[in-house]
Amino acid sequence: VGKVLRVEPRVEAARPGPPRRVEAFVGFLIPSDCREVVLGDLRERYTSFRCYLIDVLFVLPHLIASRIRRTSDLRLFLTEALALYGAFLGVAYQLEGARFLNHKWSVLRLTIPTVAVLMGLALVDAYDSTGVRSLRKILLEVTLCVGFASLVELALSAVDRELVLTRPILLYAGILSVALVAALRIMFPEDAGRFRGA
Amino acid sequence: VSNKSFRGCGPRTVWRLKMWQHKGLSRSETAILASIPKVREAYAVTIHDHLRESNPGSVISLGSIYFALEKLEDYGFVSSWPASPTIERGWRAKRCYGLEGLGKRALMESVGTANQIQDLILDVWGPEWAKY
View (tube, rainbow over the protein chains, first blue to last red):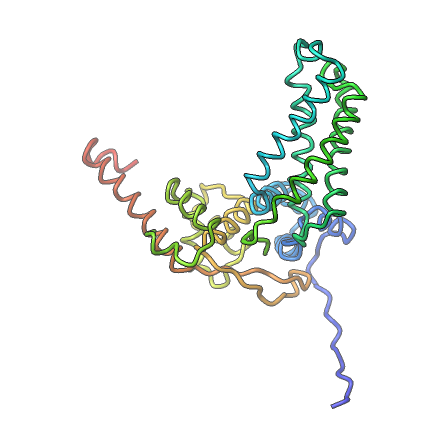
C-alpha cells in the first residue's frame, strides 16, 4: 500500500500504420460512438496508405448511415419535414404571394432548403454521442443546420439563380424554422429505448 | 420468431423484430450470422476475412459488415462486448460479437426458407435446375 506502481511503457507497434495526422482526421470523421473500434480495425487492416484511404472511403458512408438509422426517429423526422416545408412555403407566400407559387420551380425551390436542413439534423444526431437534449444545444444545432441550408442555397445560386429562394424568404423562413424545429425537438422527448452504444 | 420472443422488449425493438419478420434476413446478414460462430474472435475484420476466404465470389465490404452487425445487435440476434486492445491495432479496443438464441432461430428460419425454395424449384423445374 502506498507503493507507486511502475507502469510499463507501451511498446510501439512494429508494423507500419497510417500517418498520425491522417488517422486523427479520419477519427474526426467517424462518429464518436464507434470511433475507437473502427480506427483499430482500419489500423489492423493497414497494408499501404492507398488501401487505408480506400478502406476509409468505403467504410465511412456505412458508418454514418448506420448511426443515422440508430439515432433517427421517423415520427420526429416526418414532423420536422412538414414543419420546415410549411415554414418556407408560408414565408414565401407571405412575401411574394401567388407569383411564387406560379414559378415553374416553386416546389423544388422549397424542397432544396428543407432537405438540406433535414440532412444537417440527421448528421448532427448521428454525431451526437451524448443523446442529451438541452434547449441551448437544440437551438445551436438547429441554427447550424439552417446555416448549412443557407450555404447550400448560396452554392446553388452560382449554378442557377432560379432554383434558390430570395434572401428575405431565406432569412425569415430560417428564423421560423429554428423556432419550429426547436419546439418540436423539445416536445418530442428522446426515445428512451434508443440504442446509442457502438 | 414467435410472439413470445417479444416479451420484455421495448416498443421500438418489437417494431424492428416485426419488420424483420416481414422482410427476413438479407443475404449478407445471413452470411454474417452464420460466420460468427465459426470465427474464433468474431469482430468486423475477422468476419470480413472469413467471408472473403469462404466465398471469394461474394463482395461484402467492411462497411456493410459494420452496418449489418449494428442492425443485428438492435434486433437482439447478436450481442457485443469490448475485447482487449492489441499492438497491431495501435492499442485500440475491439468489439467482439456472439450469436444469441434469437439469432440462431432467425438463421434456422432463413435456412428453412431457402430449403423450401429449393424444393419448390425441384418440383417445378426438375433436378437439372437445382444445379444452378
